[in-house]
Image 1 (tube, rainbow, N blue to C red):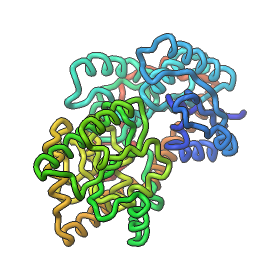
Image 2: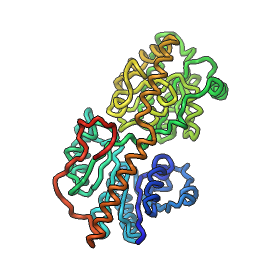
Image 3: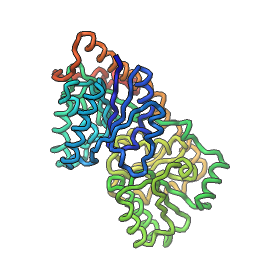
Image 4: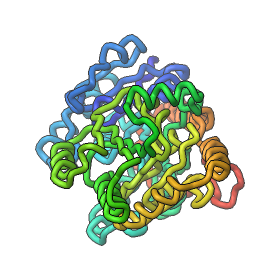
Length: 421
């Protein structure tokens, strides 16, 4: 009997960016892979044909990014239930907050009652989050955990929080190294490659800061702009500095206006959605990652993998890999003056110290290599596959209603970096 797996996410480009490796693993285990997402968002997604060539069936699911758009998300829930019934989906792997919400609800409601895996790319409740976030998101996650067979987290803080959640009977939690870092692609540039990248971008000999991320309030790019204004006030000008931001989003027009009104246009460039991020990073002297909240932050890890120091806002994600004074520095997300001080410190660093820091950057990126992520995900999918086979052999097609006390099969005292056993 053919096995069907459904990968769910909010936006159409999620599969191409992060999930192709997982899709291949599922295919190797004999699954027909389906991808459900809002394929009309973002507007630049045009990869349906490429996914089809890889044997992945795509389905339009009209889910919204916000869980509060109830009409749209109820429609999406009906669409997911229809997909599960039509293809007899036996495994759902859901991502993103709304994808995780709807996927797990569908798994609990559907007569097929598939096994459900949820990857939490960063809980919305965390140390330092608002009381409102805890009051809303924690109870929702607690209830949805009862419809979750395998919960994947990407940082230690979320792993500790996951211990409070009542997963289904025999439910398991794993900490994984994000979606995995492609260290072959994001390798240190040669001297010639770096010079050519700087020539094409018109950087010259300036100290070049780069940020990568969607333009929204959480990514907090404005903190870096305010830091540049502190530097301009202190030095009298921003001569010798340039700042480039790769990413698009609803905040772009507002950010662009803010840059122009403060006279930063000559020193700050918005590159928009950028498919060639590595070429921009190859020209960078410093990667700035000022997000208020990050589950992990693959963009910063990609920079470290290229030997670029990271100046990040201190949060549970950046604490996983930034070692202050070794491969970068951490600042409070709401203190632009602290960002300014660290930018000046790194800009004035002597060459010997800079070389040592580049080596430390490369070392710190290794534990997040793609091969570790693939190894853990293969173990997780094989575990899920055994659970499905066992249920089928017993003549039980349903996983719903499996209650019981959650138990982790991975003690936090183990020395191994990743895993759930």
